[in-house]
Image (cartoon, rainbow, N blue to C red):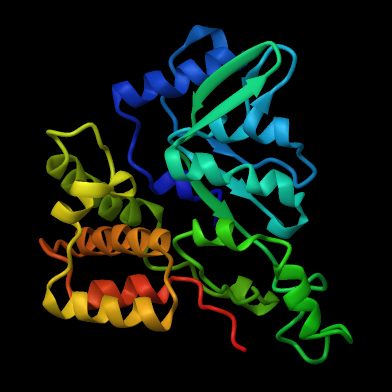
Length: 278
């Protein structure tokens, strides 16, 4: 599913293609000096070091988070990464860039990525199946999931539980809607964002902040009331609040709505990570 995501994203604009190609050129991966016109998809192994993910080395080069600039960074088996390595992504996920400081160089690389992370609910992977779950369930799930820090999870906008694919599911007919149809809807929503932000330096809703967030992502009265109720009951942080507004703005764009309504806020809230129960 993660590998399919670049296929539904809009094509790179000429300016974006140049940015992606510049990073690849610095990393030494640009093929025959040709401009890269496809969105990057990077999937580093969970044994990757901090330098491999964020950049570094004797001759400082971009890491995976920069190689995925304007594309997808996929981290499979998220809790298996070293915690310090994961936490090194907190700053670039917030700012869209990464500062690499070494004794012989101090370099800033772009790092505007879509982070996709996948993980089992626990180490054995069978938490929801009493017949297969280990003897430590459900305690093992809490221990396993706690390997990912709260601040990093707070930077992930959509938290979706996916049921296991059974063998019998593979025999079902293909879905009626494929990547091409989804890509059309995404392109239409991106076109709305481009038109809205044409007079700014911003490109997508993910970059909305400050006055731009107030101007373009303020819900209607019913949506604002629901938002304030959720902020209290879900203990939303300031970061979570603004990220939720960006998601609601995108949901409204996908629906072709000019203003964020209660239904868009409700859907955005449904994707937020729920606070643990006492």
